[in-house]
Length: 490
Image (cartoon, rainbow, N blue to C red; front, side, top):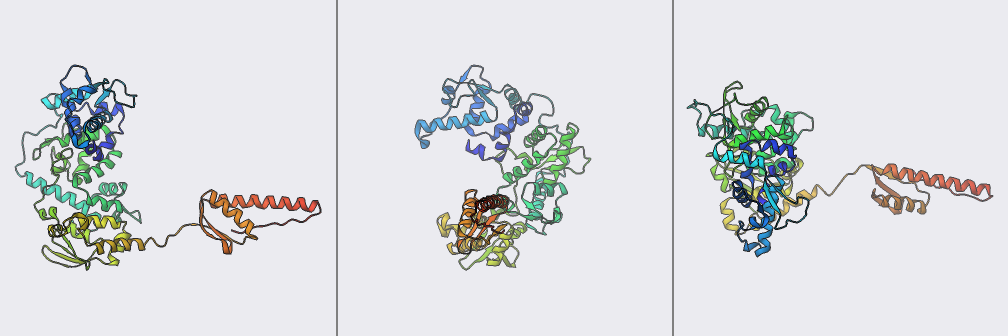
């Protein structure tokens, strides 16, 4: 269950309506892709029930779950079974006889979604309508190889990342639709509302720390929110994930919505198409691994980076054994780079460089996480444990530099002063405290600073007090007495 819920797509599917699930499960490719996303035990339950015609109860599925002693014996086994079944309930693959019950009774009957069952059977046996898994072209372009598709996908995807970090290494810039999606997703923002003048955000830097598959779904889920037909679009993505890498497929079997999606996906490197009018397209590894555990990109250019390439010393000096312009640009966001060789870069972490990164929305924890996740194997061998991987003095200083920016905070509000007495001051301050709008109190000089939103309420309170004081004064004057009026100023 945890593995499924950690996938951003799982939460998105959980929000679909029953009618949307009915349309989605009419596609064998969609059923196969969603099956791949399920936890292992959930998949095991589905396969056992797929060809089983008898009534299945919860206690029957318990026999299919192996004992998990590490989780606490029977209780751990029960929790594991419940979590696995809940994953199927949320995706409406399974239904139970008492859906309103909070507990999962042993005698509760389970039933596989008939639409999912029929389509998934077709997916496993190769039946169904033609084109369910794409229409393969009879002729293949010999110039298009798996290696060329991998290179194309990597170049297209790195173009987006280069733009995010402000690197000029990318020969071309992403298209307008890609830039709009980066802004819509919150990965970049522009102070001038110009898509070409955007800067990376804290969320965008966190995006760079994720694996490529998670990055893809982060963007694709935002893309789905803007799609004309959500079910058809996500179904098309599922179909692409089931296609064969290196094989050409016809566009003649695609709908108008799918053709539009096809054109957009080419900007991300998921699809290769020689021209916008080409009758064929090639899915890249980015597309065919959308719902699998295989790596989306198999790069031969920067294989050493997977093991780590950064060395950080206690004197704040930084050495990066890399020739990847993207990683160098990321380092440049928070480090002062001094020299660059063929496959080696030196730099220094300074107060100014960290403040520059913080100004772009990057947090100290994100910087530390980036340095730790890409630490050189020699650093790991020397540290022994992950908590001692980076020099403590450097890590603490990075966090202190972040705290420097938080020492002074500005708040918009209103200052009330010129109270005629301490009694009037106390009445106003106590009222402001009760409604939670006090930002600063200065009792010695009878001043109080309230929030912008609370100003109207405090002002009305003072007016009521002034009106009451005026009424008392008039009543006292009529009776031959004296009245005192207090009127604080704002």
